[in-house]
Image (cartoon, rainbow, N blue to C red; front, side):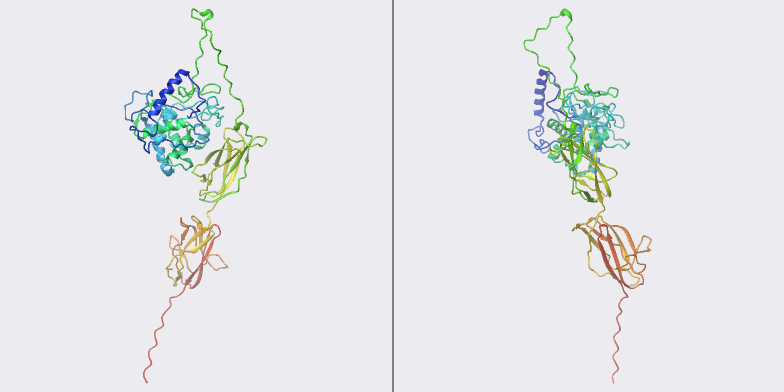
Length: 578
């Protein structure tokens, strides 16, 4: 859950002032970059000042818990009771929740080793977003006992995100709400969701699914989280707030110094939230409804009781000495940029073609327009790769969200072709508004070579019934570069004018040792090299041709010679003397 600072709902001025002083003092004492001795270390480095926030966020910038870690280093302490407690933060993480974080780290270590995701980062975000799934109130499968929902994002003190899932995840068909222990909004979960526990479902309320999804979300864009700049960017992309970044960094460093496992359901619940609300989560039977404060959001102030008629024995209130404040200005009903989008248009995307394994050189460009054809800026466009394909955007993701620029154009990240060939569909849609999507076709072709050459020049000769001493090896290139993974066929042909397979002369052997004169399913290696199996000769002598063809049209013909071994004539005997 992330904050919309400056639009928070406020408590009384006196309470706010006192809280501000207390938090400022505590924040100063625990600012990242300062350890117990006042020395700055690389592990405690402050967030880089040039870190930029993503246009969107995983949580829709919903509220979050603002409790700071304790001043003392974490140390194991026994649970104080059978259920969640409130009050001072502590280092214990509920067993199932901790297991989910560590399994997500292990999965990302295999899937994206260059990301260097630490499980402590997931723990820090889980602490700030949901108090570690509300103190570990999860069942044996890791699913929360009751839903954890943020307030509805209706623009009233929060971001405005209209419903994108028809209430499937959050039970709200008018506005979106952040869902689950990692607080994904439905539109983000739709592409970032993962099935980590293998039950066939991507459930944002399941800590295993949610933690793995959060890991992949933080590891997109080729970010290396061991680099402070990338770490800052990843956290800001999860929740677009500098205060949020600083808070997550404090919890990250706290957990890095040590933590311990505690029983599920016994974790500490945070006290404070960025929207000054109580932080309660709605139950399945009491979903938030439009027009009312969502459970988990700010508590409404009680209406003052009216004075009894005639004073009722109480002292009547004194008339105000200053005029009352004028009523607050009602929220603006002006349409947002997203509301004005009528349709999407292609913005000059060139033909999208790439060989398997290569990056596409052209990128998709989409323009958001009003009904009158005017460009609309600051609108989020989601690009989704559809269908059974291993083609992705750079960074390995199948979905990317990009904001339109001042010309109303959003340019998708570059596509990276996978090994599956054929047409790939990329669909552009508007986030937060239902308008017709725009489909693009990207074509992945077979890996190809346009040139073949032998790597050696030794003569290929053999005696009848013998074995060729040298094997044929060739190198494939495409436009001068190594052509790896290119399919090839080798055939012992009848003649230059007849490329059908010969029925006599040199041959290869199959697994059973039988003669074969055509080899298929060959591929060049990572260096573009292809080394053919050994060749053998039958009793037929003469010159024969071996033809090698590759995908892309490259062809090479090699001569093979089968000849009887030369015999040396004996020297003539000297004639007898006369």
